[in-house]
Length: 245
Image (cartoon, helix red, strand yellow):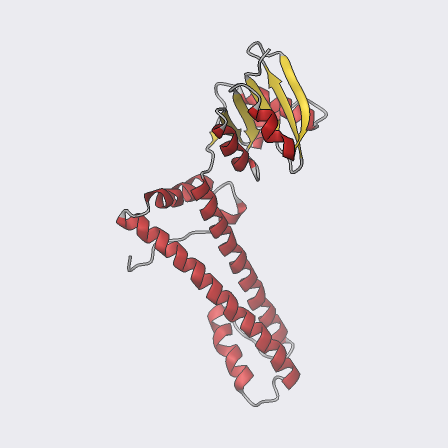
């Protein structure tokens, strides 16, 4: 009996496979290591493969499609009703194979490499912003211990802190000045890195506005509209073209 529907429970190292034939009879149920997964799937006849949309799954989806398989991704919340009691990897894979065969199932688009590139850029930018915010709050909190109150404003921290470091006053000791100078240097470095990332994003939007680089500009559109609600790194991220573009 050949496999017509294959459910794969994706993991970091060990993958659970559950395959059924056209009558729904189980013909494949096995655990496969990461290194053997491509070999096992490549030896199967072209079939429908279902997986939960999770971290790392888009890579496997693209690779399986290259082998001639039809790949469908589903949100975990839509797969859950098809998983039997006493949840484990085997039952998860079985539930996935059952869910992917439902005619009314809602599927998640497979991300292209261009979309993955932009997602990495967006997530990297979000991480830099979080680190910068944490650093600014740390500076403000430490300065409070010296009686220096800086309003909740990144711009005011950038303006007031250098003046404190330059002034010959008793507010900060020489030892403290060295510490705050290091923190200020870190802030300048984060600003510079964020400016570089924003420049890359501006160039991408410029290509979209001028019709250049269609594949990547289209990936910007799809990344924002398809994944803004599903990936944490996009939860509060909004980027608009520069006014002069």
